[in-house]
Amino acid sequence: MTDRARLSLGDAQYEFPVLEGSEGERAIDIRDLRAKTGHITLDPGYGNTGSCESAITYIDGEQGILRYRGIPIEQFAAEPNFVEVAWLLIFGALPSGDEYTSFAADLTRHANLDEGMKHHFEGFPRAAPPMAILSAMINALSCFYPELFELEDPERFRGAAARLISKIRTIAAYAYRHSRGQPYIYPNPRLKYVPNFLHMLFSEPYDDCACDESVIRALNLVLILHADHEQNCSTSTVRMVGSSGANLFASCAAGVCALWGPLHGGANVEVLDMLERIHNGHLTPEAYVKLAKDKDTKVRLMGFGHRVYKNFDPRAKLLGEVAEELLARLGVDDPLLDIARRLEEIALSDPYFIERKLYPNVDFYSGVILRAIGIPTNMFTVIFAIGRLPGWIAHWREQRAGGSRIARPRQIYTGSTRADYVPMAERG
Ligand code: ACO
Image (tube, rainbow, N blue to C red; front, side, top):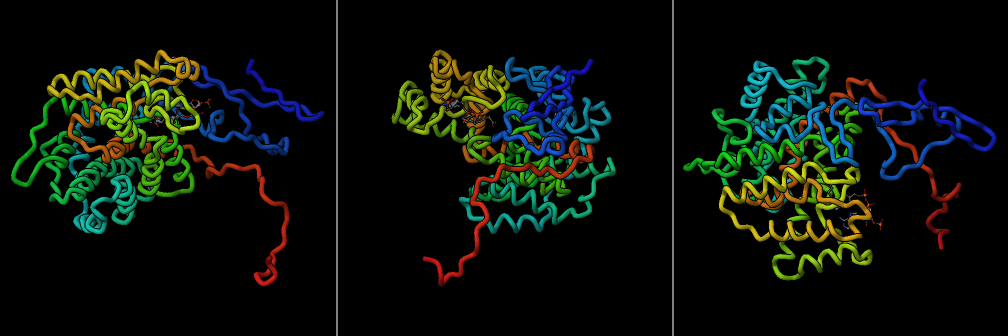
């Protein structure tokens, strides 16, 4: 028999259905709570609120499990292929050989930006934050593809997804080149997704960059490990914006803005800043951890803690290993990796972090890897956005397909009760 949840409010009793997900997680379905009781729920930060049902990604934060469409993320590490994972997330199953080849060809075909878009880059100051440029330029794509606002047709949706996944990488590379006053490098149709991105970032008109296979592998894995994380802040933003009927480009541009914040995707930049501050001699790792425990300082151990994971973030585990391997392979001796290891060691044996179940998250080691690849710190969150894009697209599509209502939370009003307007001359 299906469980029912019972609620007593004063003398009245109410019953609500209990739903169960495919992995056994349970929810009280309060869809008609307000209609039945006149009450709403209050859950700032949404720690107890399920905003939707979703079949894309499963997380068990207590056990450190993350699966895309049922597949544990560890299984993508042997031969990391971001394009394959993008397809899996968006379309629900691993691509067949033909599907993969044709999607990869679409990504190659759509890599160029309209020449008109290049002028937009010129308008940004050199020091403009690349996340601002990324968001603005993804939104600008709406101006170039108005025919892709209506995406009910599967072929048309596929074309829009391919354009976005392909072009975000070109936009990111152009933003980087612009910030350095360097000429834009056109995409090379002979290169695959990740090498093509590295080519647009690091080649010169007179000299193609040669990328080590270990770099391509590491970047593929970094992108895969960022590709989706169910209802996180930026993904919820994309779903919310999409629920208003906004087009795919506008919705994903909003996702970029949400990701930018230091408590979300921006944390990978903060981690590097923290490691550099410690390295530059201002603090020892021990002293930094002490500061992070002191509530008066507002300092946090960046790259530690997670709303969902109360155990190791499985992404951090993989990235810690990749950081070790990549630096060894490239012969890079980065003192920041040693500092990160020491911080992890101190925190994991400290009662403050143990009691609060604070473990390294995805941002803790990703910066060390990106730095070894030669990507500057201010581009870290942009890389996160490129990785997260397939997840945003998958959620946008799922949200649309569900025909769900516009997302519109309620509130408990705590402001002034009814007041009267006082003309300026009569105010004290
Ligand atoms: N350093 C020190 N203390 C911390 C940290 C940290 N990194 N994270 C949480 N805490 C403490 C809080 O002060 C709080 O202590 P209290 O109970 O004594 O008041 C307790 O642990 C619970 O923390 P909350 O902030 O309530 O946890 P929440 O789930 O709201 O926040 C978050 C999660 C934002 C990730 C938080 O852990 C944090 O700020 N971490 C550092 C930033 C970071 O790495 N963000 C990236 C997250 S992963 C991602 O977005 C891709």
